[in-house]
Image (cartoon, rainbow, N blue to C red; front, side, top):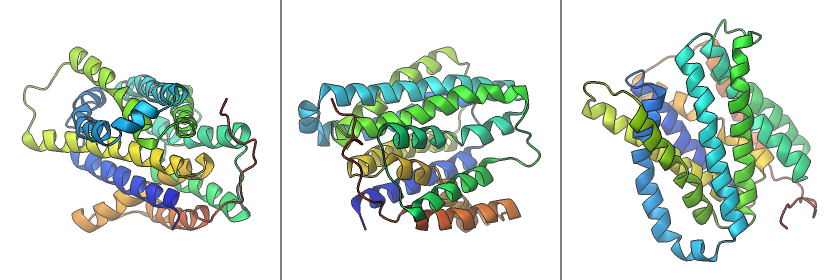
Length: 294
Protein backbone atom coordinates (compact mmCIF):
# COMPACT_ATOMS: atom_id res chain seq x y z
CA UNK A 1 0.00 0.00 0.00
CA UNK A 2 1.47 3.38 -0.95
CA UNK A 3 2.19 5.70 1.96
CA UNK A 4 -0.20 8.40 0.71
CA UNK A 5 -3.09 5.93 0.71
CA UNK A 6 -2.31 4.76 4.26
CA UNK A 7 -2.34 8.36 5.52
CA UNK A 8 -5.56 8.98 3.60
CA UNK A 9 -7.24 5.99 5.25
CA UNK A 10 -6.06 7.22 8.65
CA UNK A 11 -7.72 10.57 7.85
CA UNK A 12 -10.94 8.75 7.00
CA UNK A 13 -10.76 6.98 10.37
CA UNK A 14 -10.05 10.19 12.32
CA UNK A 15 -12.72 12.29 10.64
CA UNK A 16 -15.16 9.38 10.70
CA UNK A 17 -14.66 9.24 14.46
CA UNK A 18 -15.22 13.00 14.55
CA UNK A 19 -18.53 12.53 12.71
CA UNK A 20 -19.56 9.80 15.17
CA UNK A 21 -18.77 11.94 18.21
CA UNK A 22 -20.66 14.83 16.61
CA UNK A 23 -23.70 12.59 16.41
CA UNK A 24 -23.34 11.72 20.10
CA UNK A 25 -22.91 15.37 21.06
CA UNK A 26 -26.05 16.40 19.20
CA UNK A 27 -27.29 19.89 20.01
CA UNK A 28 -25.69 20.20 23.45
CA UNK A 29 -23.63 23.16 22.21
CA UNK A 30 -24.00 25.78 19.52
CA UNK A 31 -21.60 25.66 16.58
CA UNK A 32 -19.61 28.58 18.00
CA UNK A 33 -19.37 26.97 21.44
CA UNK A 34 -18.27 23.75 19.79
CA UNK A 35 -15.56 25.63 17.88
CA UNK A 36 -14.28 27.26 21.07
CA UNK A 37 -14.23 24.20 23.32
CA UNK A 38 -13.02 21.74 20.69
CA UNK A 39 -9.89 23.87 20.33
CA UNK A 40 -8.78 22.31 23.62
CA UNK A 41 -8.54 19.00 21.76
CA UNK A 42 -6.10 20.60 19.31
CA UNK A 43 -3.57 21.26 22.08
CA UNK A 44 -2.25 17.67 22.54
CA UNK A 45 -1.79 17.33 18.78
CA UNK A 46 -0.03 20.69 18.59
CA UNK A 47 2.23 19.73 21.52
CA UNK A 48 3.20 16.41 19.92
CA UNK A 49 3.86 18.11 16.57
CA UNK A 50 6.00 20.75 18.28
CA UNK A 51 8.10 18.07 19.98
CA UNK A 52 8.37 15.65 17.07
CA UNK A 53 8.72 18.24 14.32
CA UNK A 54 10.91 20.82 16.08
CA UNK A 55 13.94 20.13 13.89
CA UNK A 56 11.80 19.98 10.75
CA UNK A 57 10.18 23.28 11.66
CA UNK A 58 13.61 24.94 11.83
CA UNK A 59 14.44 23.60 8.37
CA UNK A 60 11.04 24.39 6.85
CA UNK A 61 10.84 26.90 4.03
CA UNK A 62 9.17 30.21 4.77
CA UNK A 63 6.98 29.77 1.69
CA UNK A 64 5.68 26.41 2.88
CA UNK A 65 4.91 27.73 6.35
CA UNK A 66 3.12 30.78 4.95
CA UNK A 67 1.02 28.56 2.68
CA UNK A 68 0.11 26.33 5.64
CA UNK A 69 -0.79 29.36 7.75
CA UNK A 70 -2.88 30.77 4.92
CA UNK A 71 -4.69 27.43 4.63
CA UNK A 72 -5.53 27.45 8.34
CA UNK A 73 -6.70 31.07 8.28
CA UNK A 74 -8.85 30.47 5.20
CA UNK A 75 -10.44 27.42 6.83
CA UNK A 76 -11.23 29.45 9.95
CA UNK A 77 -12.75 32.25 7.88
CA UNK A 78 -15.03 29.69 6.21
CA UNK A 79 -16.50 28.86 9.60
CA UNK A 80 -17.94 32.35 10.05
CA UNK A 81 -20.56 32.32 7.24
CA UNK A 82 -21.19 28.63 7.92
CA UNK A 83 -22.06 29.33 11.55
CA UNK A 84 -24.14 32.31 10.43
CA UNK A 85 -26.19 29.93 8.28
CA UNK A 86 -26.57 27.57 11.24
CA UNK A 87 -27.83 30.42 13.39
CA UNK A 88 -30.40 31.47 10.80
CA UNK A 89 -31.69 27.92 10.63
CA UNK A 90 -33.75 28.49 7.50
CA UNK A 91 -33.01 25.79 4.92
CA UNK A 92 -29.74 25.00 6.69
CA UNK A 93 -30.03 21.38 5.52
CA UNK A 94 -29.69 22.59 1.94
CA UNK A 95 -26.65 24.65 2.90
CA UNK A 96 -25.00 21.57 4.43
CA UNK A 97 -25.65 19.64 1.23
CA UNK A 98 -23.89 22.27 -0.83
CA UNK A 99 -20.97 22.87 1.55
CA UNK A 100 -20.18 19.14 1.45
CA UNK A 101 -19.14 19.68 -2.17
CA UNK A 102 -16.23 21.97 -1.22
CA UNK A 103 -13.70 19.32 -2.45
CA UNK A 104 -14.85 20.18 -5.98
CA UNK A 105 -12.91 23.43 -5.62
CA UNK A 106 -9.79 21.60 -4.40
CA UNK A 107 -9.98 19.12 -7.26
CA UNK A 108 -10.45 21.81 -9.92
CA UNK A 109 -7.53 23.87 -8.60
CA UNK A 110 -5.30 20.77 -8.49
CA UNK A 111 -6.18 19.71 -12.02
CA UNK A 112 -5.88 23.19 -13.49
CA UNK A 113 -2.93 24.68 -11.57
CA UNK A 114 -0.90 21.64 -10.50
CA UNK A 115 -1.61 19.73 -13.71
CA UNK A 116 -2.40 16.58 -11.72
CA UNK A 117 -3.33 13.61 -13.87
CA UNK A 118 -5.86 10.88 -13.16
CA UNK A 119 -6.24 7.47 -14.70
CA UNK A 120 -9.56 6.34 -16.24
CA UNK A 121 -10.55 4.40 -13.10
CA UNK A 122 -9.78 7.42 -10.93
CA UNK A 123 -12.00 9.67 -13.04
CA UNK A 124 -14.83 7.21 -12.43
CA UNK A 125 -13.93 7.12 -8.74
CA UNK A 126 -13.95 10.92 -8.59
CA UNK A 127 -17.46 11.06 -10.02
CA UNK A 128 -18.63 8.35 -7.62
CA UNK A 129 -17.04 10.18 -4.67
CA UNK A 130 -19.08 13.31 -5.28
CA UNK A 131 -22.25 11.25 -5.69
CA UNK A 132 -21.52 9.56 -2.35
CA UNK A 133 -20.69 12.86 -0.62
CA UNK A 134 -24.01 14.27 -1.82
CA UNK A 135 -25.93 11.16 -0.71
CA UNK A 136 -24.35 11.32 2.75
CA UNK A 137 -25.13 14.99 3.27
CA UNK A 138 -28.30 15.91 1.40
CA UNK A 139 -31.44 16.01 3.52
CA UNK A 140 -34.72 14.63 2.30
CA UNK A 141 -36.78 17.40 0.79
CA UNK A 142 -34.01 19.99 1.01
CA UNK A 143 -34.24 22.17 -2.05
CA UNK A 144 -30.98 23.51 -3.40
CA UNK A 145 -32.31 26.41 -5.46
CA UNK A 146 -33.43 28.73 -2.67
CA UNK A 147 -31.59 32.08 -2.53
CA UNK A 148 -30.84 31.23 1.10
CA UNK A 149 -28.23 28.69 0.04
CA UNK A 150 -26.08 31.43 -1.47
CA UNK A 151 -24.62 31.70 2.01
CA UNK A 152 -23.01 28.31 1.34
CA UNK A 153 -20.84 29.66 -1.46
CA UNK A 154 -18.18 31.34 0.75
CA UNK A 155 -17.56 28.18 2.80
CA UNK A 156 -17.44 26.09 -0.38
CA UNK A 157 -14.82 28.34 -1.94
CA UNK A 158 -12.81 28.90 1.24
CA UNK A 159 -12.71 25.29 2.42
CA UNK A 160 -11.91 24.15 -1.10
CA UNK A 161 -9.09 26.69 -1.30
CA UNK A 162 -7.82 25.58 2.12
CA UNK A 163 -7.44 22.01 0.87
CA UNK A 164 -5.48 23.24 -2.13
CA UNK A 165 -3.19 25.34 0.08
CA UNK A 166 -2.53 22.26 2.23
CA UNK A 167 -1.23 20.44 -0.83
CA UNK A 168 0.91 23.41 -1.88
CA UNK A 169 2.39 23.73 1.61
CA UNK A 170 3.60 20.13 1.60
CA UNK A 171 5.51 20.72 -1.61
CA UNK A 172 7.82 23.02 0.35
CA UNK A 173 7.84 21.69 3.90
CA UNK A 174 7.20 18.61 6.00
CA UNK A 175 3.75 17.47 7.06
CA UNK A 176 4.67 18.00 10.73
CA UNK A 177 5.75 21.62 10.25
CA UNK A 178 2.80 22.39 7.96
CA UNK A 179 0.31 20.84 10.39
CA UNK A 180 1.75 22.76 13.35
CA UNK A 181 1.26 26.09 11.59
CA UNK A 182 -2.06 25.13 9.95
CA UNK A 183 -3.64 23.97 13.21
CA UNK A 184 -2.14 26.85 15.15
CA UNK A 185 -4.34 29.22 13.14
CA UNK A 186 -7.43 27.69 14.79
CA UNK A 187 -6.39 28.62 18.32
CA UNK A 188 -7.03 32.39 18.07
CA UNK A 189 -10.44 31.73 16.52
CA UNK A 190 -11.32 29.36 19.36
CA UNK A 191 -10.32 32.01 21.89
CA UNK A 192 -12.36 34.64 20.01
CA UNK A 193 -15.50 32.52 20.09
CA UNK A 194 -14.89 31.66 23.75
CA UNK A 195 -14.82 35.35 24.65
CA UNK A 196 -17.84 36.41 22.64
CA UNK A 197 -20.26 33.51 23.09
CA UNK A 198 -22.71 33.13 26.00
CA UNK A 199 -22.27 29.82 27.79
CA UNK A 200 -24.77 27.31 29.16
CA UNK A 201 -25.32 27.37 32.89
CA UNK A 202 -23.80 23.89 33.14
CA UNK A 203 -21.72 21.75 30.80
CA UNK A 204 -21.71 18.08 31.75
CA UNK A 205 -18.59 15.93 31.94
CA UNK A 206 -19.90 13.91 29.00
CA UNK A 207 -20.21 17.03 26.87
CA UNK A 208 -16.69 18.12 27.81
CA UNK A 209 -15.29 14.71 26.86
CA UNK A 210 -17.12 14.63 23.54
CA UNK A 211 -16.21 18.14 22.46
CA UNK A 212 -12.53 17.75 23.39
CA UNK A 213 -12.52 14.42 21.55
CA UNK A 214 -14.00 16.17 18.53
CA UNK A 215 -11.15 18.67 18.50
CA UNK A 216 -8.51 15.98 18.91
CA UNK A 217 -9.82 13.88 16.01
CA UNK A 218 -10.30 16.92 13.78
CA UNK A 219 -6.73 18.06 14.42
CA UNK A 220 -5.35 14.54 13.97
CA UNK A 221 -7.18 14.21 10.65
CA UNK A 222 -5.74 17.49 9.41
CA UNK A 223 -2.24 16.24 10.21
CA UNK A 224 -2.78 12.91 8.45
CA UNK A 225 -4.24 14.56 5.35
CA UNK A 226 -1.17 16.80 5.17
CA UNK A 227 0.97 13.68 5.57
CA UNK A 228 -0.93 12.10 2.65
CA UNK A 229 -0.13 15.12 0.49
CA UNK A 230 3.52 15.13 1.62
CA UNK A 231 3.80 11.43 0.73
CA UNK A 232 2.83 12.22 -2.87
CA UNK A 233 -0.94 11.95 -2.75
CA UNK A 234 -2.63 14.02 -5.42
CA UNK A 235 -5.05 16.65 -4.16
CA UNK A 236 -7.54 15.61 -6.86
CA UNK A 237 -7.59 12.12 -5.31
CA UNK A 238 -7.00 12.70 -1.60
CA UNK A 239 -9.54 15.55 -1.18
CA UNK A 240 -12.59 13.59 -2.38
CA UNK A 241 -11.42 10.42 -0.61
CA UNK A 242 -11.09 11.99 2.84
CA UNK A 243 -14.48 13.66 2.47
CA UNK A 244 -16.06 10.23 2.39
CA UNK A 245 -15.57 10.14 6.19
CA UNK A 246 -19.36 9.80 6.80
CA UNK A 247 -18.85 6.21 5.63
CA UNK A 248 -16.86 5.53 8.83
CA UNK A 249 -19.24 7.53 11.00
CA UNK A 250 -22.22 5.52 9.72
CA UNK A 251 -20.34 2.26 10.28
CA UNK A 252 -19.61 3.20 13.90
CA UNK A 253 -23.23 4.18 14.48
CA UNK A 254 -24.39 0.82 13.11
CA UNK A 255 -21.93 -1.18 15.22
CA UNK A 256 -22.00 0.75 18.50
CA UNK A 257 -25.42 2.36 18.60
CA UNK A 258 -27.46 -0.21 16.70
CA UNK A 259 -28.79 2.49 14.39
CA UNK A 260 -30.43 1.64 11.11
CA UNK A 261 -29.85 3.42 7.82
CA UNK A 262 -32.24 4.34 5.07
CA UNK A 263 -32.07 3.64 1.37
CA UNK A 264 -30.24 6.89 0.63
CA UNK A 265 -27.50 6.24 3.20
CA UNK A 266 -27.18 2.61 2.11
CA UNK A 267 -26.73 3.79 -1.48
CA UNK A 268 -24.12 6.27 -0.25
CA UNK A 269 -22.17 3.48 1.48
CA UNK A 270 -22.18 1.33 -1.66
CA UNK A 271 -21.14 4.20 -3.93
CA UNK A 272 -18.46 5.35 -1.46
CA UNK A 273 -16.86 1.89 -1.32
CA UNK A 274 -16.77 1.75 -5.12
CA UNK A 275 -15.23 5.22 -5.16
CA UNK A 276 -12.50 4.25 -2.67
CA UNK A 277 -11.61 1.23 -4.77
CA UNK A 278 -11.35 3.32 -7.92
CA UNK A 279 -9.58 6.37 -6.48
CA UNK A 280 -6.97 4.27 -4.69
CA UNK A 281 -5.65 3.05 -8.04
CA UNK A 282 -2.24 4.58 -8.74
CA UNK A 283 -2.36 7.51 -11.15
CA UNK A 284 0.02 7.96 -14.08
CA UNK A 285 3.13 10.06 -13.33
CA UNK A 286 2.52 13.77 -12.96
CA UNK A 287 3.65 16.25 -15.55
CA UNK A 288 6.90 18.02 -14.63
CA UNK A 289 5.06 21.35 -14.71
CA UNK A 290 2.63 20.12 -12.06
CA UNK A 291 4.53 21.93 -9.30
CA UNK A 292 4.10 25.55 -8.26
CA UNK A 293 7.41 25.85 -6.45
CA UNK A 294 9.21 29.08 -7.21
